[in-house]
Length: 529
Image (spheres, rainbow, N blue to C red):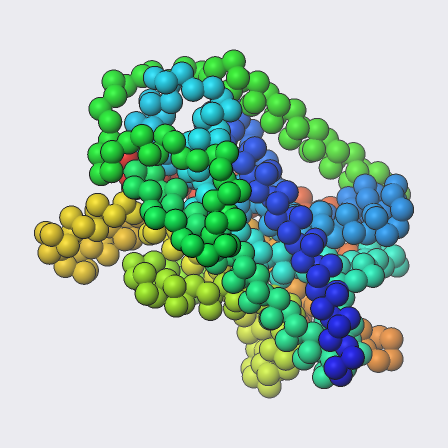
């Protein structure tokens, strides 16, 4: 078995390069769309519905686009590697984009007034206020997005549509799927061990230090003495061009009394930025539509649409119930747990590394032993599906709650101690309200992520020794199962109906429920708003 380890290390390095490229692209994308949506109402009306649509499309829904855009028109090796990176990007980016939007919307009005009084250019506002204000949420949500990217690593590195199957030459996701399908359990265990080791190193060298470093950008906080370790210094050097000068200009614990300035519809620079973002988004949506049309046209069966849509709606109802009862359980666990971790520095530094390691181990990699253990229980298919959906939700909520509570100004905690406010009253009037905006943001992305996990939770198949296929997870009815079966059969019409129905439902629900809750909690509970 020892001769397998060098190959696993090399394959993990390939996967990690794809993950880091996808994460970097996700952060850049999130700054562009999140800042524009947070500072301009016109952009907000365009970008938020687009993000709702894009995050609700399951990763299988992007496969026809990948086949047309990357695989069909590029050399096979390059096309497949770009496809994998793009698929991982589609699982990472929406969570970070919503967190950037929330951070920019929550910037106190005094800071914005100060930028106008100093006549700061768009570039200075972006680099000295908007980006520094988002670092905390970006860092915490990068840990969540990394976990989500790993969740879909196996299905990204090995994907298929109909009779066409594609996979990268090197990748830890390919190794895990191959060993599991061939029942090479010793090599499978080694692959999981190498994956966990890589996750721990990533946490130590990147995710943990990134989160700690980002806390220096709390608005209104005094600068903290720099740490001496080289990793922390690397992040400080990286951000040398984007220091939070506006934040340091305000005295600690006080807001400048600046006369209210009526917001105009936007400077010339801001209008140009919004217009550029609109053009890019429209171009992307147009490219997606054209690619989908080219992919679907040869396989369309219009006469079957009515029957297929009825089947989709029934499956949708089952999946809806499945997602929401698991969400209720997840929220009841994540909200108090996230607050308990965030309020104690000792708990934060002791528990967060463990959570980041556990969250970064993809449930899909551990699915076979979990399903084997649960298989002897009644309703084993539903229990396995619930476990997968739970793991796809819980990290969004926990890390967002931690980020929201950690953003509470230290003056409020100090005042509470001086006034000897009771623990229950402090939870009721400070911690829970402070966590609500981030909790709602986490809920939006968590539920969107849950719909995506259905492709693994409701029906997941691995190959057997004889060349057949054995379902590891399987429920009676569900949209994820229907989409999986349609993808395996190359039924583009049914894939399109599943994706369209899911997207329309989630966007409608987000606008009618989540967006109203978010606007209400942000206006009521944001500090300095």
